[in-house]
Image 1 (cartoon, rainbow, N blue to C red):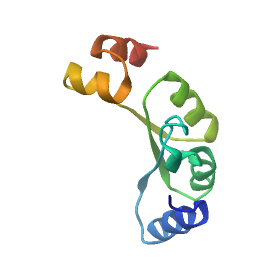
Image 2: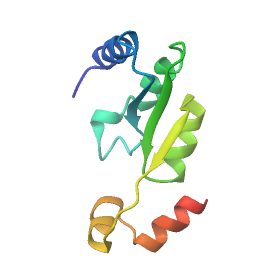
Image 3: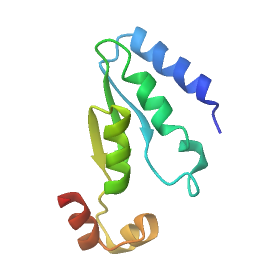
Image 4: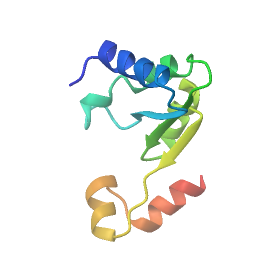
Length: 103
């Protein structure tokens, strides 16, 4: 697990290097992916950097709502090409995930 302070320094360095957009976090359940338990903190900090377009990854509506609350500018929702991948990684069918995207 990368410490939050290290993540923030890395994002700041990338911003200082001139990157206009950085995907800074994934709003996934911390119980399943403890490495992303600080997603809101990291996103909030990144959103304070002038001119940085802050992108995040979300698996569902709940993650999207948390990302918006944290100040994300761009949200990428995971969609799988196959049923097997969708069920293994999102624990829902592709049709269920498409419905989640509509919400």
